[in-house]
Image (cartoon, rainbow, N blue to C red):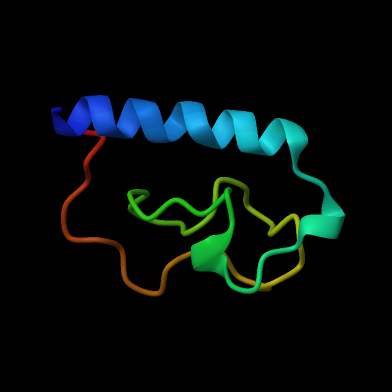
Length: 70
């Protein structure tokens, strides 16, 4: 399976999880959150504000060196 296929499958799983997720299912850390995006160059989260209030700032201090979406 290629990297693109893996990313696509991960996105499909995240969509399914987000449909059934709620505020009661607050993750313990950002790494376990279904909105966490490790591939984004300037942010860690899908949203500009954490929906669970975990972190005040979702933007990275230093951007990733390589952008996977360019």
